[in-house]
Every structure is written in structure tokens, then in C-alpha cells.
Length: 70
Image 1 (spheres, helix red, strand yellow):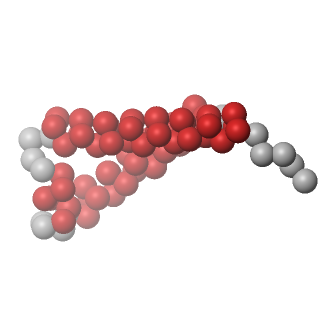
Image 2 (image 1 turned 60 degrees about the vertical axis):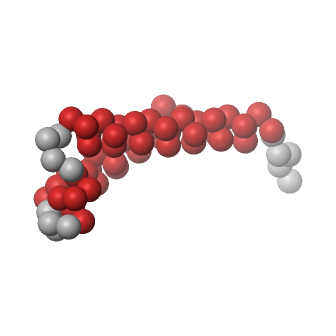
């Protein structure tokens, strides 16, 4: 049975918090840089292409954060 290491759990929480912060920062930058509201375009106008691009950005950012943690 493995012993629970507090330092490992603490570092995982720190990296998770940092990853979530970077994630929301990038989404905010995307919203500010574009001349239209990304949220409105996807939810109200049903722009599927924009939703796919945003999903790709989210997945890419997740892969970068995951690689940084390892």
C-alpha cells in the first residue's frame, strides 16, 4: 500500500490552479482581442465553426499545461 505524500498532492493542486488560471486568462484574451463576442456567436447565432476552433484551442492549451506538469 502506497503512502500518501502531501507534497505530491499539494503540487498537483498548485498545478491545477495554475492551469485553470491560465485557461481562463487565455479565454479572456480571446474574447477581448476579437471584435465580436465569442460567447454570443456560439450560443445565440450557432456558429459551429467558431465552436470547433475554440474547442481546438482549449484542447491544445490542455495538452500544453499537461506537458508542463510532467
